[in-house]
Image (cartoon, protein in one colour):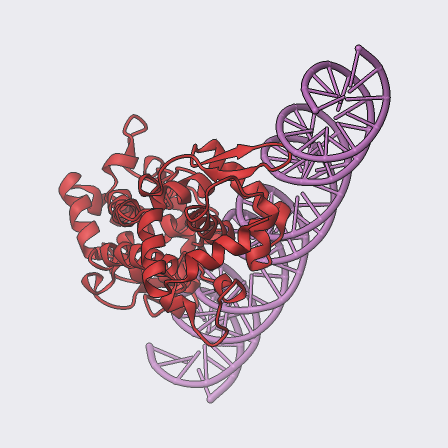
Length: 156
Length: 156
DNA sequence: GGAGTAGTACTCGGATACATTGTGTCCGAGTTATCTAGG
DNA sequence: CCTAGATAACTCGGACACAATGTATCCGAGTACTACTCC
């Protein structure tokens, strides 16, 4: 099991966007960490579809947060990039086993599926409890001049 | 993010092995749910390397649990199949950003990495708290004749 | 001087290739059970 | 009848293909700004 690289990139981008005002083009966000600009752009589109970012086309355009950083959880970003389905996929192989009932939905009754779902929920709960604003504040606490550095680095 | 199919197969196989005595060949375990036998065999090898199963070669050979089902957590099986590394991989892109210090290990200091690690630990904690014996007992509670059905289906 | 218009630079968005990983199959090495022959 | 050896069947183990997904790139559609021309 493994999260895509895009999760790291988009999370950092969201935190950085929380520190600036106007829209920032993907190329400038990518230049910060020397990332491939076009690919980052592609991933940010997923955040736009999830109503986490707003894209502004044309010159002086770019991406900005769609709402307050305190209203964007880490889970929101992860789900936008990775999709909503949970990590463990119960294919209900028990249905095809001895004593299996084709009319029973084993995604709810299979003890294994239940345990895996419980772990998944615990993971999501942690991510949902942490917002972009939390992370930004924590980062600023650890290195107080980071916001200003990002602002100047993202300036035209 | 997505766990491999093998997790479901190996977990069910471990529960089934907890209900029988001697070694069971992979082909017979696969036949239970009409799974590709050779591929299941390949996955069970990973459990052998992790000291969860013991393989017995030759005629009348197969796989059996290496220790008591109560001493095998779901996390043990998942780690054996998926590998030990956590889902979120921090590549420390902050190092290459403005104000980044090449001598700092941001896997421990980056606020994002910390949050993702916390979620990962919560997920692992849930899986570690649940054993094969727990799942087997839960399944037997829900359908009491399941163990006997499995035993006869796995008999030569 | 001001307004309208054509042109230009910039940005997102999706369509298109490449690389990595998951999925599935096949055959050989090694072991055990069985059968056979000899004492 | 018992024992030793050869044979055959069975099983794991890893090497070898195929498919799906993640990664990366490129080009077109659309917008805002700028410069120019005309009134």
